[in-house]
Image 1 (cartoon, rainbow, N blue to C red):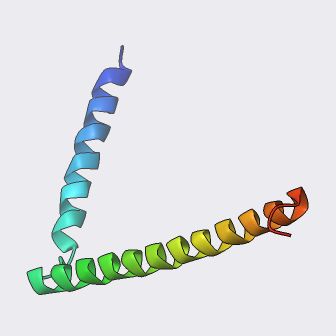
Image 2: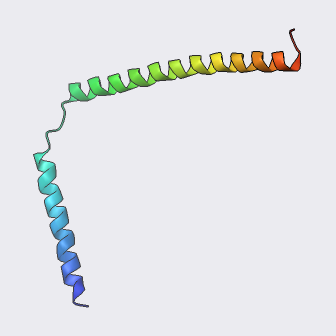
Image 3: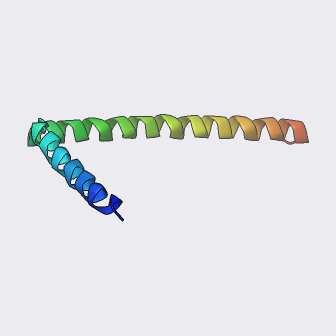
Length: 74
């Protein structure tokens, strides 16, 4: 039962240290946050467009292959 005070002290020390470290963080400004968020959204949209195009291309290639193999459109 003597471990209880040590665990409690460690938890308090952890949260105290965490608070001290968070005070050292240089937080981004609102404009930096908006710019970064816009960049991420734009990047995601570009990657999504590329994947949609590749999906359509490979789907059509796959359908053409199976049509050829099965004897359709010969």
